[in-house]
Image 1: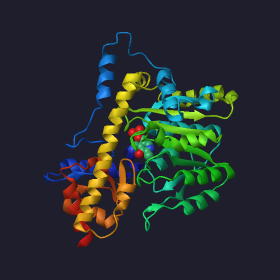
Image 2: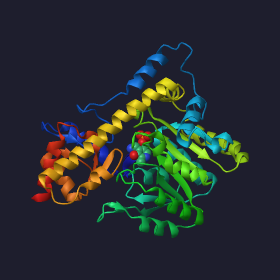
Image 3: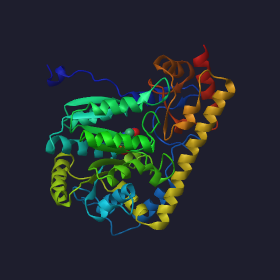
Image 4: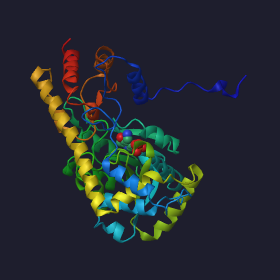
Length: 403
Ligand code: PMP
């Protein structure tokens, strides 16, 4: 008899399971398009040169030590993060209504923010896009939310945003519900609202007094332009909304396992900032006490140094350009093969992922027959494509759709 007899086996996490299967597969032409991590043209993981530079400087800095950071983290990091998100000329920052809290990457920012909303604002209902990053549901439910609801987002027939469905679902939301919005490079579809559509979304959010919780996991990584990728968040803030925004440095700094993130909070009233900070401090204190320093020091070192900041922008350009090039090549290869269907969505979508339009059976066929590892939803990570394997992947898609 064990205390644990009552514990049921939980479902596997698809993306981690896929990586394991990929590693165990000895097929020479296997391709991993599952995990969202950048790869070079040679298919190798990449530590950004600017990160190497920062790490060397930090290693040689004898003034640094391993003592605890404050509960809310390294302030030179969180302030620079919020400035990068909201813009150097942000009125919310100038008026001290906006601040940042260092978190355990983007996931940690979502978790801390969600727990604060559930505990202190009595929020119970949250909305996420259909589809979304598969962790949103779990993070918010574990943080104390009671009800997960979807808003329509992807229109499979047109392979584009279902803006009418989205607006209708948000119009039907209960007043005060929290709505998770992807700041840019929507995961998994790679399809973002236009500026006009964001304005329509903002109107409904205002009308229904919804609370916008942005998730920014790809700033700079999506288009290569940090300001462009922050447009939607800045638009909401300039329109006077109070927001939360979870920022991740996993992709744009390549700091995946350093768990480096920031929760940016924008309040409309400076008088509320001290209380909010004090409660966020207690939330974090009771969760993991205080964050790790390594990744935050790297990011702070780069963001607060003009020369390194420019170098970082160059590194981001390298990553985003390679992805854009792979999108072009995959589309060209499919069109050259005459693969049934239209493939413009591959180049229209932005960011790390592409929603191919392949259904579950076809996606499984890609894995089982061709050893091209992709999610059941038809999502592929563009980062896994290289000049060497893109032809093989296109042929595999072609075979899958024509047999
Ligand atoms: N949100 C979205 C939409 C993501 O795609 C990711 C990364 N896969 C995250 C948040 C958070 O990732 P991390 O915790 O590694 O920063």
